[in-house]
Image 1 (cartoon, rainbow, N blue to C red):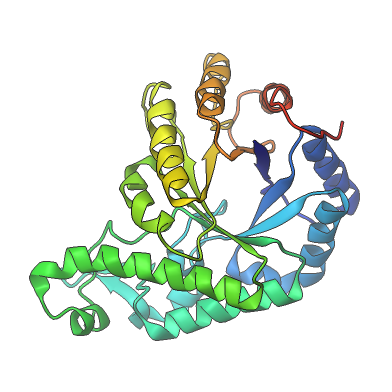
Image 2 (image 1 turned 135 degrees about the horizontal axis):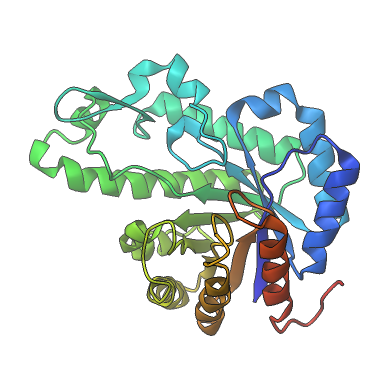
Length: 308
């Protein structure tokens, strides 16, 4: 089992960043996910370049998450997409004529812009791949002029929306492979979207399907973690793809901390290809204790080589 840690912290202080990456590597992790929002690469490219180099110097592969691009994907900062703000005609339009704060992925202008951004990141920065975090789409059926033209049968629009989202994610992953054939592509889903796993795993340019098994945020019993995780592991194995299961080690109060070990055992027992977690992430009652618990759990995973 490989270990991936999401590092959603500033890269402005190199000494702090180096210390953090050494801590992450010491926990047995082989890679990090770093989320970037649209304005950051434009304003702070030196910080981004230096920070990602420090990760690779520590022996960590780097996967970039496109935070809230087009408001289509999740991101650690709840900031609106610059593209969607400046291109309001690209927004999703529902059956009542109301516009939503999300760009429609069927707009060729939006796709062209997004794919160029991905190409630029892969060419200009030290990256090992791209992670698509919680893609949105089927939750609102789009009646914009582009979707209506592509699917004139109004009765089929909802099914068309899901099909076209799968096609869009397939093209996005193909874009990544077109720039760097060795770059890895990952898609992470919330439990309510796990019905898409089979179709996504069948896409030829997708390497890894992940699941955010956030039982506490979704107000579910921790036992749901095993059910959700199994649906990912089983399907990805059938398609010859990698599985990536994420542990919720954030937003925990002291009474919920013991359940962290229970959730981890559910995940590890499924033997996924990767386990993901977060480095000092938000809203824990005792952030240091939660990270130390996480670190102890991760270090218990049998591995061929560990860097202490």
